[in-house]
Image (tube, rainbow, N blue to C red):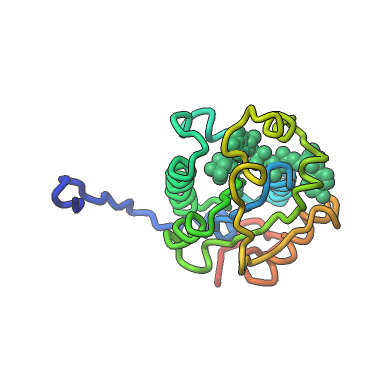
Length: 212
Ligand SMILES: Nc1ncnc2c1ncn2[C@@H]1O[C@H](COP(=O)(O)OS(=O)(=O)O)[C@@H](OP(=O)(O)O)[C@H]1O
Ligand SMILES: Nc1ncnc2c1ncn2[C@@H]1O[C@H](COP(=O)(O)OP(=O)(O)O)[C@@H](O)[C@H]1O
């Protein structure tokens, strides 16, 4: 049904995203971290958030476990539920980008089709996919929440990498191999990549206004 048929009208603010970016002195974007459970998405996203915060960049982590505590507490881990989980997250990321925030989104997002669906919600430069690469063997060795052990015992259905698939991203913007670098190195590598593609300009000057 169209929005018109649903009696829904878009209410525009007198402030634009550009106004908000100018106030902040940096661009807003979605950094989309994808990878197996235990690959390091949350650890890297939270470390990056702290680093950006200290540099005066408004950023915020949306994390799989956390979003499933509230907004998406009605969803499980079937393919259909993961798709709806990621669709809602994509919409939240869009709102946050409009609000001028650099969003750090950390979800397994195992299916190519779901990542493509979220990507299609954004202008190309606004969605930056970062593949957090780590072998299933190493993720299972780390097992920070004991979930792999439970999954091996058959106690968690549809567990990514064990009883549900993970499609390796074919053309991510950036790859972090967490078997080859520390969390701190990952943060610095991501910052460098963001600067190289013009998504971030550090150090920020106080009161700076974006020109590009
Ligand atoms: N079946 C199954 N498969 C994978 N993960 C599971 C599952 N059940 C619970 N968990 C926990 O949920 C976290 C993943 O949620 P996501 O929202 O990121 O998943 S998805 O993107 O919708 O696939 C995931 O967090 P991370 O370990 O941070 O990836 C787990 O803590
Ligand atoms: N280079 C690394 N990058 C990220 N995490 C690492 C790295 N090396 C070891 N780890 C550890 O691996 C675990 C990753 O867990 P987590 O960040 O929750 O992953 P995910 O969010 O992908 O499930 C943490 O215990 C972290 O300390």
